[in-house]
Amino acid sequence: MGALILGIVVVVLLVLIAFKSTHSVGALEVGLVSKRFGFKKLSDDNAIAFHGEAGYQAQLLMPGLRFKLWPMFGVKKYPLVQVPAGEIGVVIAQVGAPLPIGAKSAVYHPDFGNFSSVTTFVERGGQKGVQRPVLPPGTLLPIHPVAFLVLTASTVYGLPVSPDLVQQSDANTLTPESFGLTGDMLRVVVIAPEGEIDLVGVVTTLEGEPLPSGDIASRLGAFEDITAFETAEAAGTAVVTDADRIELILGSKNNLHNNYQDYQAFLDAGGKIGLQHDPLLYGAYLLNPFLVRVDLVPMLVVNQGEVAVIKAFVGLPTLDTSGAEFKFGSIVRPGHRGIWREALRTVAQAMRAHPELIGGTRDRVDTDLMRTGPGVVAKGGAEGYFAMGSGDGLGVAFKILDGDAAHRARSAVAVAVGQRLGWLDRAALVEYGPSLPIRNWAGRQTGEVRVAPSLDTTRLER
Image 1 (cartoon, rainbow, N blue to C red):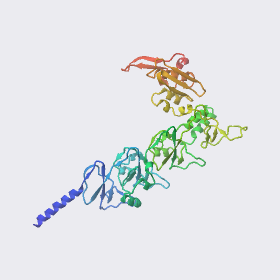
Image 2 (image 1 turned 180 degrees about the vertical axis):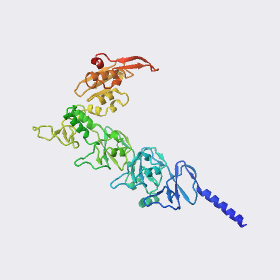
Image 3 (image 1 turned 180 degrees about the horizontal axis):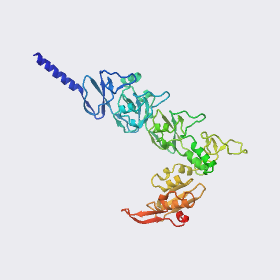
Image 4 (image 1 turned 90 degrees about the vertical axis):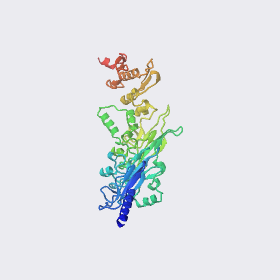
């Protein structure tokens, strides 16, 4: 009788253990495993066990039916991190090395990926605190709820370990405001016109090396490119016009850090804390609110028949070019602090600074002309029309009579005209002419487009 009772007790115990050890993790969930006892002890600054210590385990349970022996292990389920459309996810690490003194955010390494592997993060030297990249809209990830907190406009994901945040989490009052942010700061930054007012985004960064003494705004590389211009000009190896300087200064360097969205790249390129020289133009941007702030201001519009006189508060030191007779301040070359001697004119300088916004980026001769020819502006039109001009005031317009639907003839003619007038080097843009093959659908050449002999600079050389 006693053996029977013992057998029943054992069976019941085994069933109980099997039942409590089996966990059904939903399709949009992860299972956080905690080990209740063990021989190893976690270090004081680590909240996660990587080597069998008691405490929260680094390995999560993925969706499905999972087994973890009870009572050795407990499992609590957490939702996958989801970033809704129009929002971003800011990641805060609760594991890793401490931040250096004075740092506001952690160094990012590409191996960290999207922070879905806490083991990789720790092994590759991840640091605690705010992470520089943000999670984009539409993200759905199994992120460790103890290793990382993720803030979105509507939800705070994760299990905080800081005592004050634990209290708020237990009371269901943990919000972005608990971290000094608002919901609006965790949304995609959109820059677009407001009615008839065109806007740009003036950027202020909140982390980086301090600005040099006397500077009020940061420009990547400072003004070393202007210095290089002046050095080449002084040596007689280059002729640099004020228009060239203005184009260089107005040209944005935001491509070096994906418009402040890659903050690690911004710092690696020498980005400084504070007001930035290069603004953000129309678009939608995923910006870390702990690191980047944007103020929308009206865009400067130079209307037809007007000019804009620029007084620069940033740039190289003031070198007055006005002469002794001028008594009303310093007139300087563009790139120096003071009143520029060359005013901003209408759209030509903007076209040369951003040619891809005029003609596009793929096989567009007008874009390539403006990128290659100093001072050249160009624009193709419908039905075979094309117009181009240079900084000396000379302009050329022509039409291909058959409409040039394939954009072959106008490209060859435009480049040939530019070379003939000396706007382009004779070896420039050879992919557009002086002759272009015409091929059928099988790829066989059936003819060619060739410019007139009077325009063909290769014939002139012969």
